[in-house]
Amino acid sequence: MLLIAIIVHFFVDFATSIFQPLGPYITEKFSISPRLYAMTLYSISVISSITQPLFGNLTDKVRKRNIYLAAVASITMLFASMISIAGSFMVFLIFAFIAQLSNSAFHPMGASIAGERKKQHLAFFSLAGMFGYAVGPVFITWYAEKHQLKGLYIGGIAMAIFAIITLTRIKALEAEGKKTVKASWKNFRIVLPIFLFVAFRSFSMGIAQIYGPLYASQLGRSLVFGGSLLTFTRFVGMVLSTLGVYVGAKTGNALINMISSGGMMVFGLIFTLVDFHTAPAALMAVLFVSMLAPAYLSMSSTVVEAQSRIPEYPGFASSIVMGFAWSMGSLMNFIYSSIFGNNVEFMIKSFWVISSLALLAAVWDFLSAKLRRSR
Image 1 (cartoon, rainbow, N blue to C red):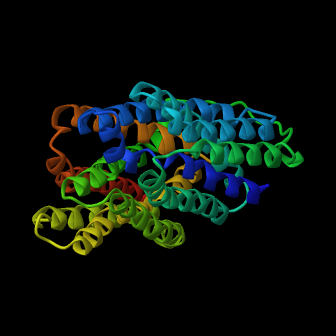
Image 2 (image 1 turned 30 degrees about the vertical axis):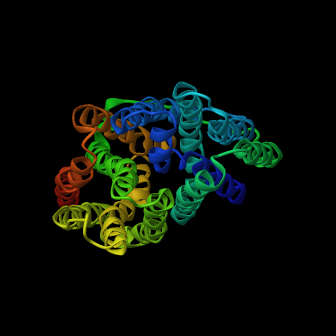
């Protein structure tokens, strides 16, 4: 059961990792501005992520979990691959939106299943998703350069069939009674500091992941170079995310959050001070990875911490810090990019300022955790 959920998580996150690095390709293909591309992706993220608490509530109630997972996973992979036949930017957005919404429906259920056993299993589940999320950018940018995305839907169909065949055959998922979920303000308040931290972390990560490839393209770097920035960052992030779970179990998640956001802020400031019009590409790659990768240190540990604070409702807890907080970060991205979105260099170099807000939220969580221990 756990192994199949982990494998499918790889394919699901692989499928939805392809939109951000395609910014230079899509803006050129459909003759749109960077601001329009960023705003539409952020708006999709807001709508799809904000539904995760609803999916989290459903996760803690649903009985036919094998059918549920098969449906949302196959829809995600199929529609993400359908962008290869999109004849207009509007059609591209429709396919991307359906894929992202299904992805949001998948995550609370998958995390809940992984978290039913051991905390380490949730780390493996997250690791598989990040591996797919890491491989996707370099693959899709290479594929776009070489084949202009032709035939991508064939791979999507194959992955969807795999999900349907494997997940529907898992009888252990078939019928499991779940308790009634109470999505109350009291439960939300328990994880409020983590929620704010993740929201600001998502805000800063959203800037880097969309405007990083666009900035590289403006500097004359190839499409694959922009995709590689995200891929290398996410590979480093895989290691840091797993490390964060184990270290957080010993030191406390609040400290992990401070280190994570502090690293983002410091290296983001260094990135701002370098003139990449004259600096070598390798330096840009190293600094980009250095400023974005620390975000992943807290990626899995925040979910583990949220579930530990509301152990009766793991799906609801996961949806708050995986979905609702992400949607708030994307909403801030949308507003921010609507004002400054066409100034690509300004957007990417304001990363450190947004990261400092995540650090403030992490400090609040740290002080709150210290106060709880003293009682």
